Length: 313
Image 1: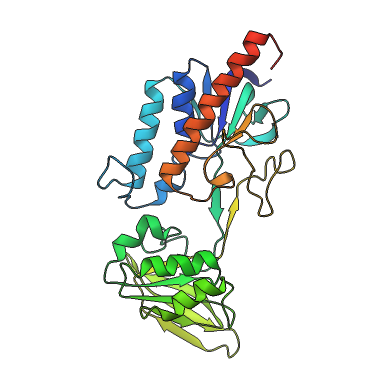
Image 2 (image 1 turned 45 degrees about the vertical axis):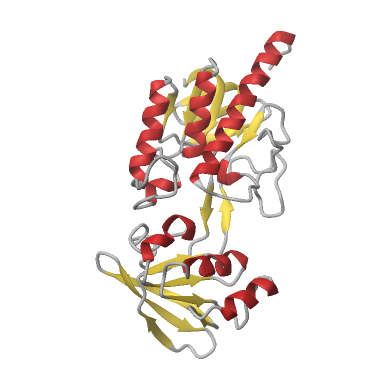
């Protein structure tokens, strides 16, 4: 029989948003647990370096994640990594894993979002070594280099333009013969002399040794195989929120991201969502940690108000 564990606040996800929530909740004098299906750290663990997180001129993604975890340890946040989750009931505020049954008074969802993958050879192998899903995070590492952006929507074209601040050339590889981005964004991109468009083309393979040095491409109309010498590849074919475990239980927008109010509360009372999993205009480490702080403060307030009114949580 599995052990049943009770906490005031249960945080689902151990990335920057989750750890920030854990620190703030624990400082609010409520018992707090963080559960993750893998090791802690979230997306930043995959980044070679970050140089836009205040207080650190440059820091490795793994190093920053380690500091978040150490900070949570200081406040005695209970940690449960590598949990195989069997069921999540947000209404009852219970989470069942293969090892434990968790029950909380509040739940903070910090499960993040995952970039949609190209699914080609070399993509997984070169993450952090030439493959990146965040131009804002990693663009400055490609100063005077050549990069490729894969995609044709708003995100792809906006990120391509952002990368021209650093790279000497940016290829935009798109499987169709015209972009899907808004016309005003397209016009700006077409005027940018650093951007070269490669239409009707898909990436077949990402090639390199220690780092990426090229991509193999295929023209979808002629089947012609080509090669582009690039130092970095930025796939922007979309992202999807990690909500599979509970997607039918609360309100989401048309893309599946969780809808919250300004306190990070979802459509369910006492359930909050933070970071990349919610409908947010910016997905960065700093905004994720801010979300976590806000959610935790209001989760603590929710617990206190319910306790004072003697309502059952």
